Length: 197
Length: 197
Image 1 (cartoon, rainbow over the protein chains, first blue to last red):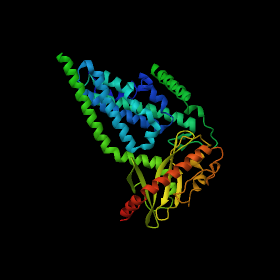
Image 2 (cartoon, each protein chain N blue to C red):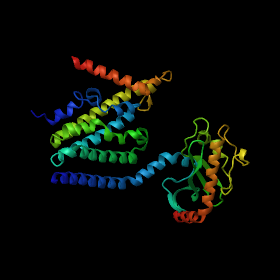
Image 3 (cartoon, chains in turn red, brown):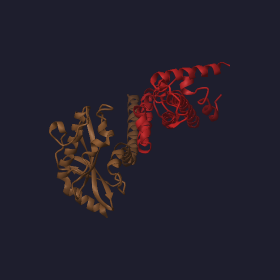
Image 4 (tube, rainbow over the protein chains, first blue to last red):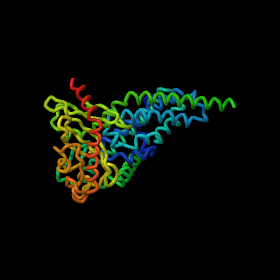
Protein backbone atom coordinates (compact mmCIF):
# COMPACT_ATOMS: atom_id res chain seq x y z
CA UNK A 1 0.00 0.00 0.00
CA UNK A 2 1.32 3.40 -0.93
CA UNK A 3 1.98 5.69 1.97
CA UNK A 4 0.62 9.20 2.01
CA UNK A 5 2.84 12.22 1.61
CA UNK A 6 2.37 13.05 5.29
CA UNK A 7 3.67 9.65 6.28
CA UNK A 8 6.66 10.08 3.99
CA UNK A 9 7.32 13.39 5.69
CA UNK A 10 7.02 12.25 9.29
CA UNK A 11 9.12 9.12 8.91
CA UNK A 12 12.15 11.36 8.34
CA UNK A 13 11.60 12.98 11.71
CA UNK A 14 11.64 9.86 13.84
CA UNK A 15 11.51 6.39 12.32
CA UNK A 16 14.24 7.13 9.77
CA UNK A 17 15.89 10.22 11.23
CA UNK A 18 19.15 10.22 9.30
CA UNK A 19 22.19 10.25 11.56
CA UNK A 20 20.59 8.35 14.45
CA UNK A 21 18.45 5.70 12.75
CA UNK A 22 19.99 5.33 9.33
CA UNK A 23 23.48 6.22 10.67
CA UNK A 24 24.21 7.95 7.38
CA UNK A 25 25.98 11.19 6.58
CA UNK A 26 28.14 11.10 9.67
CA UNK A 27 30.97 13.17 8.23
CA UNK A 28 29.22 16.55 8.51
CA UNK A 29 27.45 15.41 11.69
CA UNK A 30 30.77 14.95 13.45
CA UNK A 31 32.60 17.81 11.81
CA UNK A 32 30.35 20.85 11.90
CA UNK A 33 28.38 20.46 15.12
CA UNK A 34 30.64 22.63 17.26
CA UNK A 35 27.73 24.98 17.70
CA UNK A 36 24.02 25.31 17.03
CA UNK A 37 24.43 27.87 14.29
CA UNK A 38 26.84 25.77 12.22
CA UNK A 39 24.74 22.66 12.72
CA UNK A 40 21.52 24.28 11.60
CA UNK A 41 23.22 26.11 8.72
CA UNK A 42 24.61 22.83 7.45
CA UNK A 43 21.23 21.15 7.95
CA UNK A 44 19.37 23.82 6.00
CA UNK A 45 21.88 23.67 3.15
CA UNK A 46 21.55 19.89 2.98
CA UNK A 47 17.74 20.09 3.17
CA UNK A 48 17.63 22.49 0.25
CA UNK A 49 19.81 20.20 -1.86
CA UNK A 50 17.82 17.16 -0.78
CA UNK A 51 14.42 18.64 -1.70
CA UNK A 52 15.58 20.04 -5.04
CA UNK A 53 17.41 16.91 -6.09
CA UNK A 54 14.57 14.62 -4.96
CA UNK A 55 11.98 16.60 -6.90
CA UNK A 56 14.06 16.90 -10.04
CA UNK A 57 15.18 13.28 -10.06
CA UNK A 58 11.64 12.11 -9.46
CA UNK A 59 10.43 14.21 -12.41
CA UNK A 60 13.15 12.81 -14.63
CA UNK A 61 12.98 9.25 -13.35
CA UNK A 62 11.56 7.93 -16.64
CA UNK A 63 14.02 9.88 -18.77
CA UNK A 64 17.22 8.80 -17.03
CA UNK A 65 18.53 5.50 -18.41
CA UNK A 66 19.21 2.91 -15.71
CA UNK A 67 22.83 2.44 -16.75
CA UNK A 68 23.91 6.02 -16.18
CA UNK A 69 21.56 6.93 -13.36
CA UNK A 70 24.27 7.47 -10.74
CA UNK A 71 26.17 9.84 -13.02
CA UNK A 72 22.97 11.78 -13.70
CA UNK A 73 22.07 11.92 -10.00
CA UNK A 74 25.51 13.22 -9.14
CA UNK A 75 25.27 15.87 -11.86
CA UNK A 76 21.92 17.06 -10.46
CA UNK A 77 23.11 17.03 -6.85
CA UNK A 78 26.42 18.72 -7.64
CA UNK A 79 24.60 21.50 -9.48
CA UNK A 80 22.36 22.23 -6.52
CA UNK A 81 25.26 22.07 -4.09
CA UNK A 82 27.18 24.63 -6.09
CA UNK A 83 24.09 26.84 -6.18
CA UNK A 84 23.88 26.61 -2.38
CA UNK A 85 27.55 27.38 -2.06
CA UNK A 86 27.22 30.52 -4.18
CA UNK A 87 24.08 31.68 -2.38
CA UNK A 88 25.69 31.12 0.99
CA UNK A 89 28.70 33.16 -0.05
CA UNK A 90 26.44 35.93 -1.21
CA UNK A 91 24.08 36.06 1.77
CA UNK A 92 25.74 34.35 4.74
CA UNK A 93 29.45 34.82 4.32
CA UNK A 94 30.53 34.15 7.93
CA UNK A 95 28.60 30.87 7.89
CA UNK A 96 30.27 29.99 4.60
CA UNK A 97 33.68 30.62 6.19
CA UNK A 98 32.96 28.43 9.21
CA UNK A 99 31.47 25.54 7.23
CA UNK A 100 34.18 25.79 4.59
CA UNK A 101 34.99 22.53 2.86
CA UNK A 102 31.88 20.78 4.18
CA UNK A 103 29.58 22.67 1.81
CA UNK A 104 31.00 21.19 -1.40
CA UNK A 105 31.15 17.85 0.41
CA UNK A 106 27.33 17.72 0.50
CA UNK A 107 27.70 16.29 -3.01
CA UNK A 108 29.04 13.06 -1.58
CA UNK A 109 26.76 13.05 1.45
CA UNK A 110 25.29 9.57 1.27
CA UNK A 111 21.91 10.79 2.54
CA UNK A 112 21.33 12.87 -0.58
CA UNK A 113 22.44 10.22 -3.04
CA UNK A 114 20.78 7.55 -0.92
CA UNK A 115 17.38 9.26 -1.06
CA UNK A 116 17.75 9.87 -4.79
CA UNK A 117 18.54 6.23 -5.46
CA UNK A 118 16.26 4.58 -2.92
CA UNK A 119 13.27 6.88 -3.05
CA UNK A 120 13.06 9.60 -5.71
CA UNK A 121 13.99 7.28 -8.57
CA UNK A 122 10.98 5.08 -7.77
CA UNK A 123 8.31 7.49 -6.58
CA UNK A 124 6.17 10.34 -7.85
CA UNK A 125 7.06 13.98 -7.36
CA UNK A 126 4.90 14.83 -4.33
CA UNK A 127 5.99 11.90 -2.12
CA UNK A 128 9.59 12.61 -3.17
CA UNK A 129 9.24 16.21 -2.08
CA UNK A 130 7.75 15.12 1.25
CA UNK A 131 10.52 12.57 1.69
CA UNK A 132 13.20 15.17 0.99
CA UNK A 133 11.63 17.68 3.34
CA UNK A 134 11.18 15.13 6.14
CA UNK A 135 14.65 13.63 5.92
CA UNK A 136 16.19 17.08 5.54
CA UNK A 137 14.34 18.42 8.56
CA UNK A 138 15.32 15.35 10.56
CA UNK A 139 18.93 15.90 9.57
CA UNK A 140 18.73 19.58 10.52
CA UNK A 141 17.18 18.77 13.91
CA UNK A 142 19.82 16.14 14.63
CA UNK A 143 22.64 18.51 13.76
CA UNK A 144 21.00 21.27 15.76
CA UNK A 145 20.53 19.04 18.81
CA UNK A 146 24.07 17.71 18.68
CA UNK A 147 25.38 21.23 18.13
CA UNK A 148 23.34 22.53 21.08
CA UNK A 149 24.65 19.87 23.46
CA UNK A 150 28.23 20.37 22.40
CA UNK A 151 28.01 24.16 22.44
CA UNK A 152 26.32 24.34 25.83
CA UNK A 153 28.72 21.93 27.52
CA UNK A 154 31.81 22.76 25.49
CA UNK A 155 31.76 26.52 25.54
CA UNK A 156 28.92 27.35 27.91
CA UNK A 157 26.99 29.16 25.20
CA UNK A 158 23.84 28.71 23.19
CA UNK A 159 23.69 30.33 19.77
CA UNK A 160 26.66 32.49 20.74
CA UNK A 161 25.08 33.70 23.99
CA UNK A 162 26.37 32.61 27.39
CA UNK A 163 23.90 30.45 29.33
CA UNK A 164 25.79 29.89 32.54
CA UNK A 165 27.29 32.44 34.88
CA UNK A 166 30.93 33.46 34.58
CA UNK A 167 31.94 30.81 37.11
CA UNK A 168 31.09 28.02 34.63
CA UNK A 169 34.15 26.06 33.55
CA UNK A 170 33.48 24.73 30.02
CA UNK A 171 34.40 21.16 29.03
CA UNK A 172 36.74 22.09 26.18
CA UNK A 173 36.68 18.42 25.32
CA UNK A 174 33.13 18.60 24.00
CA UNK A 175 33.90 20.99 21.15
CA UNK A 176 36.80 18.87 19.96
CA UNK A 177 36.58 15.80 17.75
CA UNK A 178 36.36 13.17 20.53
CA UNK A 179 33.44 15.09 22.05
CA UNK A 180 31.54 14.66 18.80
CA UNK A 181 31.99 10.89 18.86
CA UNK A 182 31.04 10.54 22.50
CA UNK A 183 28.00 12.75 22.10
CA UNK A 184 26.81 10.98 18.95
CA UNK A 185 27.33 7.60 20.60
CA UNK A 186 25.29 8.59 23.64
CA UNK A 187 22.49 9.93 21.47
CA UNK A 188 22.40 6.73 19.41
CA UNK A 189 22.24 4.78 22.65
CA UNK A 190 19.31 6.84 23.97
CA UNK A 191 17.46 6.59 20.67
CA UNK A 192 17.86 2.81 20.66
CA UNK A 193 16.68 2.48 24.25
CA UNK A 194 13.59 4.50 23.44
CA UNK A 195 12.97 2.45 20.30
CA UNK A 196 13.10 -0.85 22.24
CA UNK A 197 9.89 -0.26 24.16
CA UNK B 1 24.96 0.89 -30.44
CA UNK B 2 21.78 2.96 -30.37
CA UNK B 3 21.63 2.40 -26.64
CA UNK B 4 25.10 3.79 -26.17
CA UNK B 5 24.15 6.80 -28.20
CA UNK B 6 21.14 7.47 -26.01
CA UNK B 7 23.22 7.31 -22.83
CA UNK B 8 25.66 9.71 -24.35
CA UNK B 9 22.93 12.18 -25.34
CA UNK B 10 21.30 12.10 -21.90
CA UNK B 11 24.54 12.80 -20.08
CA UNK B 12 25.44 15.61 -22.48
CA UNK B 13 22.04 17.25 -21.98
CA UNK B 14 22.37 16.97 -18.19
CA UNK B 15 25.81 18.54 -18.23
CA UNK B 16 24.79 21.36 -20.54
CA UNK B 17 21.76 22.28 -18.45
CA UNK B 18 23.62 22.15 -15.15
CA UNK B 19 26.44 24.20 -16.64
CA UNK B 20 23.96 26.80 -17.82
CA UNK B 21 22.21 27.00 -14.45
CA UNK B 22 25.50 27.39 -12.62
CA UNK B 23 26.70 30.11 -14.95
CA UNK B 24 23.44 32.02 -14.43
CA UNK B 25 23.59 31.75 -10.63
CA UNK B 26 27.23 32.73 -10.59
CA UNK B 27 26.54 35.79 -12.67
CA UNK B 28 23.63 36.79 -10.49
CA UNK B 29 25.60 36.49 -7.24
CA UNK B 30 29.03 37.62 -8.41
CA UNK B 31 28.89 41.25 -7.29
CA UNK B 32 27.35 40.40 -3.95
CA UNK B 33 29.96 37.75 -3.22
CA UNK B 34 32.74 40.15 -4.06
CA UNK B 35 31.24 42.73 -1.72
CA UNK B 36 30.78 40.18 1.08
CA UNK B 37 34.40 39.11 0.78
CA UNK B 38 35.47 42.72 1.03
CA UNK B 39 33.29 43.30 4.08
CA UNK B 40 34.53 40.30 6.01
CA UNK B 41 38.15 40.05 4.88
CA UNK B 42 39.25 43.61 4.19
CA UNK B 43 36.44 45.49 5.90
CA UNK B 44 37.81 45.40 9.46
CA UNK B 45 41.24 46.68 8.39
CA UNK B 46 39.79 49.40 6.17
CA UNK B 47 37.42 50.62 8.84
CA UNK B 48 40.29 50.69 11.33
CA UNK B 49 42.53 52.96 9.28
CA UNK B 50 39.70 55.06 7.89
CA UNK B 51 38.26 55.77 11.30
CA UNK B 52 36.14 58.90 11.27
CA UNK B 53 35.39 58.94 7.56
CA UNK B 54 31.87 59.95 6.60
CA UNK B 55 31.22 57.48 3.78
CA UNK B 56 31.43 53.73 3.29
CA UNK B 57 34.83 53.09 1.70
CA UNK B 58 33.70 49.61 0.67
CA UNK B 59 30.92 51.08 -1.45
CA UNK B 60 33.05 53.90 -2.84
CA UNK B 61 35.58 51.76 -4.57
CA UNK B 62 36.97 51.63 -8.06
CA UNK B 63 39.42 49.57 -10.05
CA UNK B 64 42.48 50.71 -11.95
CA UNK B 65 44.48 48.49 -14.22
CA UNK B 66 48.07 48.60 -13.04
CA UNK B 67 50.52 46.86 -15.35
CA UNK B 68 48.93 43.42 -15.77
CA UNK B 69 46.81 43.46 -12.61
CA UNK B 70 43.52 45.11 -11.68
CA UNK B 71 43.68 46.72 -8.26
CA UNK B 72 40.85 47.75 -5.96
CA UNK B 73 40.98 51.24 -4.47
CA UNK B 74 38.80 52.34 -1.57
CA UNK B 75 37.95 55.98 -1.18
CA UNK B 76 37.50 57.65 2.19
CA UNK B 77 35.70 60.93 2.73
CA UNK B 78 36.97 63.22 5.49
CA UNK B 79 35.46 66.63 6.29
CA UNK B 80 33.32 66.43 3.17
CA UNK B 81 36.27 65.82 0.89
CA UNK B 82 37.12 62.55 -0.78
CA UNK B 83 40.86 62.79 -0.51
CA UNK B 84 41.93 59.50 1.04
CA UNK B 85 42.52 56.34 -0.93
CA UNK B 86 43.36 52.90 0.46
CA UNK B 87 44.64 49.84 -1.33
CA UNK B 88 46.17 46.48 -0.58
CA UNK B 89 49.67 45.22 -1.23
CA UNK B 90 51.49 42.06 -0.18
CA UNK B 91 54.80 41.53 1.55
CA UNK B 92 56.62 38.32 2.26
CA UNK B 93 56.17 37.28 5.87
CA UNK B 94 57.52 34.46 7.99
CA UNK B 95 54.83 32.09 6.68
CA UNK B 96 53.36 33.19 3.38
CA UNK B 97 52.27 36.60 2.20
CA UNK B 98 51.02 39.35 4.49
CA UNK B 99 48.24 41.51 3.06
CA UNK B 100 48.59 45.15 4.06
CA UNK B 101 46.13 47.96 3.44
CA UNK B 102 47.66 51.42 3.23
CA UNK B 103 45.53 54.58 3.24
CA UNK B 104 47.03 57.73 1.72
CA UNK B 105 45.91 61.33 1.55
CA UNK B 106 46.29 62.24 -2.13
CA UNK B 107 46.67 65.96 -1.43
CA UNK B 108 49.62 65.65 0.92
CA UNK B 109 50.99 62.19 0.03
CA UNK B 110 50.94 61.38 3.76
CA UNK B 111 50.00 57.96 5.10
CA UNK B 112 46.75 58.03 7.06
CA UNK B 113 47.02 54.50 8.34
CA UNK B 114 48.37 51.01 7.76
CA UNK B 115 46.66 47.75 8.75
CA UNK B 116 47.15 44.06 8.08
CA UNK B 117 44.29 42.17 6.42
CA UNK B 118 45.33 38.55 5.93
CA UNK B 119 48.38 36.73 7.20
CA UNK B 120 49.51 33.34 8.41
CA UNK B 121 52.18 34.49 10.86
CA UNK B 122 52.88 32.78 14.18
CA UNK B 123 50.01 33.51 16.60
CA UNK B 124 51.14 35.75 19.43
CA UNK B 125 54.42 36.70 17.75
CA UNK B 126 54.17 37.71 14.10
CA UNK B 127 50.41 38.12 14.41
CA UNK B 128 51.09 41.25 16.47
CA UNK B 129 51.64 43.01 13.15
CA UNK B 130 47.86 42.85 12.89
CA UNK B 131 46.76 43.04 16.51
CA UNK B 132 49.18 45.65 17.86
CA UNK B 133 48.02 49.08 16.66
CA UNK B 134 51.32 50.59 17.80
CA UNK B 135 53.22 48.84 15.04
CA UNK B 136 51.00 49.99 12.17
CA UNK B 137 50.76 53.41 13.82
CA UNK B 138 54.45 54.06 13.14
CA UNK B 139 53.71 54.58 9.47
CA UNK B 140 51.11 57.23 10.17
CA UNK B 141 52.02 60.71 8.96
CA UNK B 142 55.02 59.53 6.97
CA UNK B 143 55.28 60.29 3.27
CA UNK B 144 54.19 57.35 1.17
CA UNK B 145 57.05 57.64 -1.32
CA UNK B 146 59.67 56.88 1.34
CA UNK B 147 61.27 53.48 1.31
CA UNK B 148 60.35 51.75 4.55
CA UNK B 149 62.73 49.43 6.34
CA UNK B 150 62.86 48.04 9.83
CA UNK B 151 65.59 49.35 12.14
CA UNK B 152 67.76 46.20 12.01
CA UNK B 153 67.98 46.81 8.24
CA UNK B 154 68.96 50.43 8.77
CA UNK B 155 65.46 51.81 8.36
CA UNK B 156 63.06 53.89 10.42
CA UNK B 157 60.45 51.34 11.63
CA UNK B 158 60.73 49.61 15.01
CA UNK B 159 60.34 45.90 14.40
CA UNK B 160 58.04 43.84 16.62
CA UNK B 161 60.31 42.02 19.06
CA UNK B 162 60.77 38.43 17.98
CA UNK B 163 59.06 39.04 14.66
CA UNK B 164 61.59 40.89 12.52
CA UNK B 165 60.64 38.90 9.43
CA UNK B 166 56.94 39.74 9.76
CA UNK B 167 57.76 43.41 10.40
CA UNK B 168 60.01 43.43 7.36
CA UNK B 169 57.15 41.99 5.31
CA UNK B 170 54.80 44.79 6.35
CA UNK B 171 57.45 47.44 5.67
CA UNK B 172 58.08 45.95 2.23
CA UNK B 173 54.35 45.94 1.48
CA UNK B 174 54.05 49.61 2.44
CA UNK B 175 57.09 50.49 0.33
CA UNK B 176 55.48 48.66 -2.54
CA UNK B 177 52.29 50.64 -2.14
CA UNK B 178 54.50 53.74 -2.45
CA UNK B 179 55.71 52.45 -5.82
CA UNK B 180 52.17 51.83 -6.99
CA UNK B 181 51.06 55.20 -5.73
CA UNK B 182 53.83 56.94 -7.70
CA UNK B 183 52.83 55.04 -10.83
CA UNK B 184 49.12 55.67 -10.56
CA UNK B 185 48.91 58.99 -8.81
CA UNK B 186 47.46 60.87 -11.79
CA UNK B 187 44.87 58.19 -12.53
CA UNK B 188 43.92 58.10 -8.86
CA UNK B 189 43.44 61.85 -8.64
CA UNK B 190 41.30 61.89 -11.77
CA UNK B 191 39.12 59.04 -10.56
CA UNK B 192 38.63 60.66 -7.20
CA UNK B 193 37.77 64.01 -8.71
CA UNK B 194 35.18 62.25 -10.83
CA UNK B 195 33.62 60.61 -7.77
CA UNK B 196 33.52 63.93 -5.87
CA UNK B 197 30.26 64.65 -7.66
